Length: 544
Image (cartoon, rainbow, N blue to C red; front, side, top):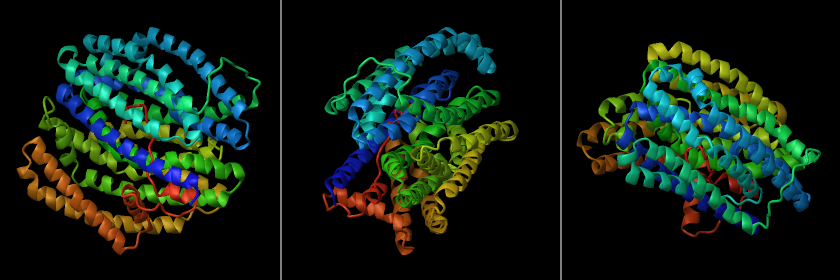
């Protein structure tokens, strides 16, 4: 094994640990959020307002910038053009400061009109309307910080520096937790709003630390004649539209939620936070580590290695996602009770949020698979293809929300999301096969079939344990012990079944255990080694 392989392997383990820690701390943050705010109108207003900066962040910040910037920047580094690469980064930062800064000023001034147009049901309440306008004006400037962080992360990823982008989200969560614990009793919902702003400032500050070690220095420059800058902006355009459509889906869901009841937006928010846990630890992690590798394969024309990496990565994501999807479908109330049912978050809220989580989870494996498929198209510098799929998604999501929110309420909205995720994955796989000929479909279908058998065993064991012991879970500690025992027993069953069925994806768990014990690293090819380890992404949206 080369030094580079060893460095990537160790970095992947460190980042996976940091990402998992961030998710755990994030759950503590969500427990406190539920404890102090429940599913009241204040928290629904905040979750609705937070859609605005999150939408712009997704359009122009970490994902869009890194998707377009990393392949171009990496290509320049491979060619030995470090000075021109640094110039590209500086030009992009300058452009962000000018364009995003102006956009933020406009949106801050237009906040009242924006709330009235997008959330008419919210605007009908003067108190909620005033609160929404104030929140929007407080949090909107973070967009500029997030877009700047997107470029910094792209540089770090190109140099295969994955650790800090995972670590910063821990700090983000800790800062918000501090604001909630010390200020929520006096500031109310504003403690969460200002904590989000302070956490974002801390994130960007931490990201600048490893940048110094790379020898990069910012220079004010903006040359639209630079072919690399023009190439980056051209690649950003379809990615931006694609991600914008995906996040407009979230906005559409939130708009329809206000037509259900004033609490529905917060119910979707709480369910999504739990649903997103395995995505952050595994799916985004695997996709993050593989992205630079797939970009290199695409840049050198090695489509065989590219195809093999993408196919195995897809199978690995399904393997680590399916257990969580099973738990959340079979016994969602177990997790919602443990995380949220404290303080002003009551049993009726648990019932509503559990239903939302169940229907979210039906499409979880497909949603996570979409992450690596999108990374594949971005590596090939063909981001236009997912764009056409996303356009269909936008219309499909709106239609599903329209037809499902009345008969099913919040559950209908989250079910619509799952259906869209499944359609998106199937369409992306079809388009990818047209460009790389074969994607190992038979191996993927066979593996997923075996995973389904393992999941059935996991679900049966977990449900029996939860059904038998839930009556004894009357406090936080006892609930934690019961759910923990259920997860351990179910997880052990899943692993045992995977071993009996000779699932190759079980190698990921064995590899991670060997690395944590200080055992020898595996001797796979570089990108195969990358595939079998979890890494982390920063996911600035919620510090995830």
